[in-house]
Image (tube, rainbow, N blue to C red; front, side):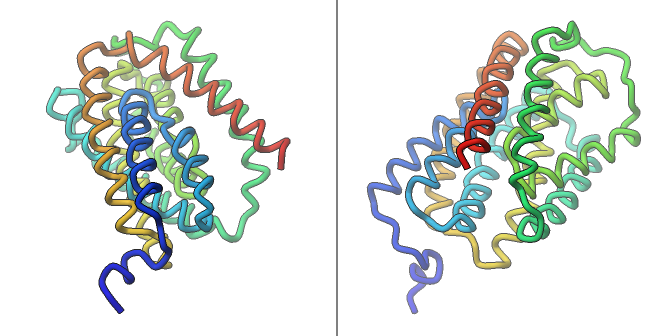
Length: 261
């Protein structure tokens, strides 16, 4: 058996490689600014006809590459402290491992109805809250108090996924009192951790198309460079409207999918 056959047990045409890599540029840009790139990527991957478990695993691979680039960019811009964020990242990773391990045992259909309600709440909070800007505010929870929240969102990201970035960002602003751009920087780190946790589970089960995921990852990294540059330069002025737009679009997509199922 050749190395290519080991890495890509399912045949994927060059056209699919090219299209998905182009889409990954767009999703990487959106993800770096406000999260929610999966709103575009997941339906595109599913439309290729690939088995769902391969879609989930391969999406995690391309996503972690793009998000890692965005994380590094926020760090260089002084919007993220790895030392302070690492404990929360480890909790997110652990939560995502548990979520990914349970995905085959728990019906995600019910969760698909609950999540749109949560995302609507995120959108409303983003529009109405005076705290959704780049000014820090007194925290309502300490870093230790926020730890279960990070673990819970990590679990959700491993189990289901859509909107995890929005949940991280909104909770960091509302509970930790962080300015929106700094909150988005820490969100990127937590997303890397939760993506890594679930990727490890999918990879252990042989549910990742490595060549396709790595190729898409190049597109995601390109988009992440574009999006993170916009976010770190313009701050809440660009993050806030896109966060609202993505939250509402993802809500509509999930509601439509739930009722159409």
